[in-house]
Amino acid sequence: MSKLSRDELLSKAMYINGNWLQGDATFDVSNPASGEVVGQVASASQKNVEQAIDAAHKALQSWRRCTAEQRGKKLRQWYDAIMEHQQPLAEIMTLEQGKPVAEAAGEIAYGASFVEWFAEEARRVRGDILPLLSEGQQTRVIKQPVGVVGCITPWNFPNAMITRKVAPALAAGCTVVVKPPSLTPLSALALAVLAEKVGIPPGVINIVPTDDAKMFSETLCSNEKVRKLSFTGSTKVGQNLMRLCAENVMKVSLELGGNAPFIVFDDADLDVAVEQFIACKFRNAGQTCISANRVLVQKDIHDAFVGKLSAAMKELKIGDGMQDGVDMGPLINQDAVEKAQELVRDALEQGASCELEGGQRTDIGALFYAPELLTGIRNDMKIANTEIFAPVVAVQRFDTEDDGIQLANDTEYGLAAYFCASSVQRIHRVSEALEAGLVGINAGAISNALHPFGGMKQSGIGREGSHYGIDEYLEIKTLIQGNL
Ligand code: NAD
Image (tube, rainbow, N blue to C red; front, top):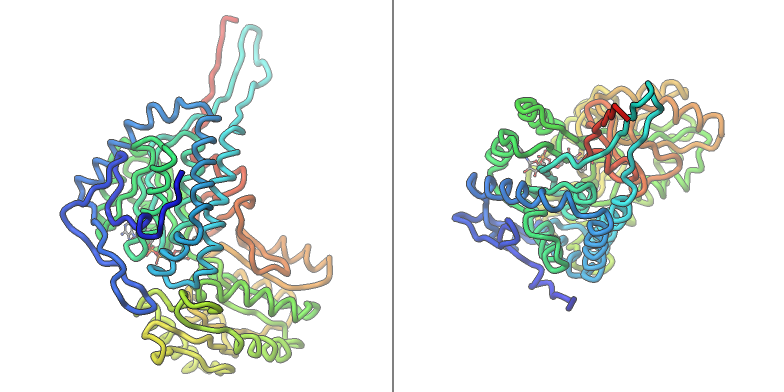
């Protein structure tokens, strides 16, 4: 396949049944670093969503009958194409989302790794033959694709949140209708350009951007041809979608919000703790679902940790993600800036102290926000109960190991949790006690295609990635044969 340029990857039309459609309306996509419009993207109407569902349903009949080898081969070709275009795909992401281009390239590789992984997992969908219950009878358990899957994804990982759903769905033999976020649809459309180029058949992947999310979900969830919804986004929207899916008893996978604690115990190596915390917190300017939202530090090492952390935070370079050497780009929009400002204001009013002043950097652009460090936070403050989604660090002090665990679990969320410690016994005790789907132990970067990823409590239902991830797209069927 000849290599495509950034402009050739930059499609602004919707992709339905292998066709690129302009539609009747458009919406603007802006660069958060400059405010400039990057593109006017076609906005799907209800009719377009229905066309996409019909196309996915028609394509399902042949895609599900392909051998696992054939499906895996197509996914592998898609993976190769994505990696060949890593740099232009990263640039498109930076232009619409703002993260530094090196970090965006990291996301392209991370997103592609799910395609590679599930290309292989396609061949490992196995069933069972169960022990005889009576003479002349045999029971077999087979797994079959769920059917047409609707996918709704967020703006913070414009590439990976799509591949993490589409790759296992396709590997299992499902077809998909994807609504990318209206803030960052261009990365999703670029993935479709490459899927078309490598010959993934028409209708297997349909991408329908729209600025009417409510219309999309209502159309999708009321259509009996769609058998599953896979959603990544906020808990509030996830709850609404789950209600909509109840109507047709549609299967759901939900990857929702988080309120990750990062606990530093008194036996931790503080340099490791600071290094891992920086990796965890400042990726994507703090706009990740597994970003450390509350930092819980044991009393005897509190001041030493805060001092080291403050020094490390001062080193972070903030600027336009297209420039070299930038660690952090802008926040996604004005609402995100105002939300962070409000959480900081409320915490300070309630008695928190500011150890490192940061905040909005209008000198370089309205949406840039310099890292900020607050101490004296309590779990009952708004900042400790809300996804901050900004480079604001909120530190609480605690006394005993049990206090630390109790504070960490005192949230309705259960996506990620982190802790730093040295004692093997403590590591064992705390790992068992934390209520989270993912626990990083002396580790701040915890997500990859080989690990099951997902939350407990109000952080969601189901797992993505790993050998568990494909099960979300498979039905179990039991075949009981008599008269043998
Ligand atoms: P969001 O819930 O506002 O939007 C997510 C998607 O849902 C977008 O495509 C949006 O257009 C769509 N949407 C919004 N309202 C809708 C409605 N009424 N019906 C149907 N679709 C609707 O979330 P966001 O601001 O895009 O993303 C940030 C959130 O996503 C955070 O809460 C973050 O924690 C979460 N997130 C979770 C994970 C995870 O793996 N658990 C990963 C990334 C982000």
